[in-house]
Amino acid sequence: MSKKLLLWMMVVTLFTSMTTSAWGQVTAPLTEDFEAGWPTTWSQDPATAPSTWSVGNNLLANVNPFGGSAYLALYATTQQQAVKAVLPLVDMSNTTTPELTFRRVQKARGAVTGYARDTLKIYGRTAVNSPWLLLQTIDSEAATWTLTTVDLSFLVGGTMQVALEYVFGGVMGIAIDNLHMGDPSQCIVPNGLQAY
Image (cartoon, rainbow, N blue to C red; front, side, top):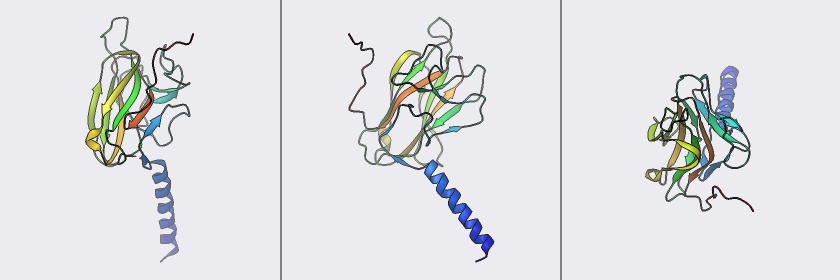
């Protein structure tokens, strides 16, 4: 075997192993509270859109994190192409009633409820190279943190990759926090409790 071919094979192997670790499969449950910043196993599609998903605090007007100090959000000021936040491939074989749950804020533009707003689409697929299947379209207003659940039970025993897609529509943005993918969480975080 020539030295050039051997070197090329080593480079391809190194690149493949780096790609596999960055895009590797994880085992359910997958949970994300965004406290550590942008998840290293997530990506964006397309990554070159004028506005993309980001993690932080005060990303949307008058929206604080549901819990902790950060959340995921996308806010575009003008019409643009849709942008997906793509989660890693998740091994769901240890689940019996898998679902995707998260908290979201999705405000209407202006003071009138029901006015134009951005849309959140949830996509799923069973392999990284499979086509995306639209699971749910959410265009209803959520002025405060609202629990959202997407049924994934049709994939019991398999693998699944999910994407959250932002579709421009109302200039107010979409915020996501406390994402969970797997069997229903045994611990529900109460909303609206006050300490006395």
